[in-house]
Length: 482
Image (cartoon, rainbow, N blue to C red; front, side):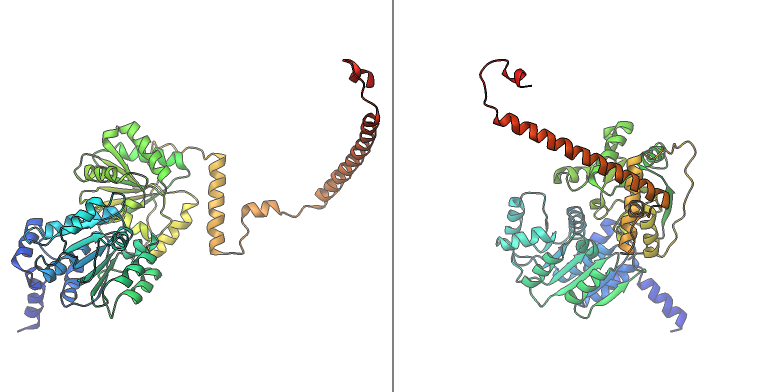
């Protein structure tokens, strides 16, 4: 066969799911969902997973990582069996666990495999009842999984596959101790899969402890944003100006059709939510963060997915677990302090090969973090001028001080010998004239203090005399003493 024909034959083979040997039930589910061709991460990851190898997958958010590991797992488990889980998928947040469960149910719809999820924020009673009925694929957050195991509601004797999804975020959230505890109680003989959008030093350490001779699958450079997302930066001096610029963008309903606004703290997210709800109505905006109840977060997410809500405001808890294909814009109201989160934030738009726009508001102190993000993603993000008509408010004294302190803290982290602007003002060497003035002031203080001491002595002597005077009865006795 000629080389060019052989090459075209391979290309045609890689553009469908039948090549992987999936059974009819799985192929029917793929058709039902609407998948046509495997994505690049699926083409590279599915074969080694089917062969039983440990796999390390690095790919951008929204490239189909979830299906890349779910499809081989469904093929491997095939049908319902036993009462205890044979595959466990760990996710860092409740939102992502729910998203994975939803995708798994869709892919298993023509099989009898039992799927369920366990996570915090809700009572464990219903989750325990679900586990008691029997389960094949379990999606869980590390904390709740360990809790149910220690209470005796989970057994891992039949576990065949363990997946860590969004491993970098899991480590950033401090789950390393729980993950290590889980690894101690599950069977040693198992298949391990680790998927992430970035590859930090922490993840590399985990890979060494978790995976055995892994096959590394990397469809893009680490921490590379999706190519179909247009990135923009606006230099905004303060909080009030950020609000004005956000309002200007949201007025354009035709362009900004479905928007996610990311904030660095829960307080800022709440403030932005209240402002947008006053200007555009409560029915058009929802807010999610760690202080919101689980049912509230679920309802807000569903309303946003269904298009009932135009704007979703949240912290980075929402940067993972939102799989909405029609998000037109992501607005970073604040530059993220965890630089890898920038990739995950903007990955909420431009999904399923559609175009998206990412807009970042940046003040003077955040510019230092933006430089680190550009270094991480190996891209220069273009700066756009502030649109006409947007008022840039004057920065208050308190906010100026906060920005200056933030700059000092960042520089001090980079260089421990850096003293900072506040330090320099406090310990500035005085000039010769200033020294003379200080000497005169010192003399005057000493003279005043000497007079004060003399007065205090005379006052004490007078009080001593009054103490020795016998006390007399009568209303006007105090006046007579004086």
